[in-house]
Length: 126
Length: 276
Ligand SMILES: [Zn+2]
Image (cartoon, rainbow over all chains, first blue to last red; front, top):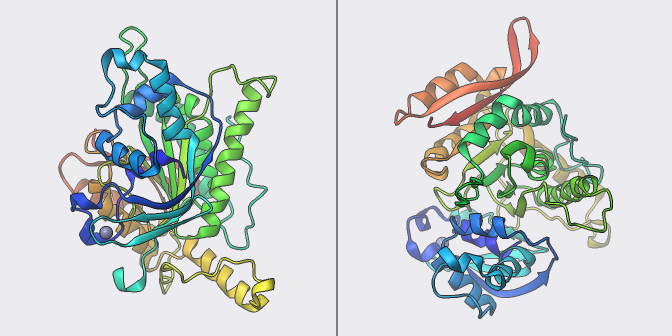
């Protein structure tokens, strides 16, 4: 799964939906892989408009990416090709192949196997 | 006609095989009336101002082989008029998630190869959206409320006496079998069960669709959101649309494509659900 995916996911447990602690889910023991994709600055700019920047910062710091600015780039900063290429690399080219996503509210762990996260719940949580 | 994505790598022993319903969705989503609607709802950044617009997130629920999402992803340029689009698939069947991943990636590569006469150079602008991931989950349960701009659902719509029980975290053994000591009989049972999840809809074929409809007002983006839902005649589509309109708050439901007309009845139809 692309790192960007986790910006749109939350805990599958119903009672967690309204909890701010359930977003973003936290990566644990993540094994990463890189996939080369064509760099498209227009795509990055449009995608940034809908990205939850604070959640993205949490995710990237957990995965060990240190070059992400504290504030979402706007205006002239969007012409900084180095920054856009960094974002392209983290958001689109970085895949999480194995590991877990953990809910910060209920502590439930969702396993990631071969790039696919398993959000099916055990019977007692459905 | 846009090419249909290849699913030749998929084992249809345990993943729903693309059929008339899948192809009706492809036709509906690439018809001029629907692409005009989508291009108006999810406009590209205007050339004059250069202002960016939020990239829409397209989610196919119960993606199966992934043929529909692969089509939308690979042909984003034609459907949306631009490729600043994100796509994501969900399914309760791990085999389907794996199949869909490959179907989408293959479709992106195929359309890219046909765009650039020489496949080794990728200088031409891409025609495809960005595919995020398949997610093994029940309906939209793993997706953050309000994030989905376009939802596509080809549900289990066949009326059946019973609704199969949904799989839980570890209930399906997806290991290959032979070296695990799993008998061919139990593999057959497992595969029959997985296929039943793709078609068995319970009472009126609506039990799963009703659960999805309940989620639509919270899961879709409050302004931009639109859903495409496939229904068959036994689902009583006129009643379904009337119920959606009765949500109030500006919700609309219209049939945008039909197929298999017999004796005045449309066997299958696609309903668009949105707030104009
Ligand atoms: Zn939780």
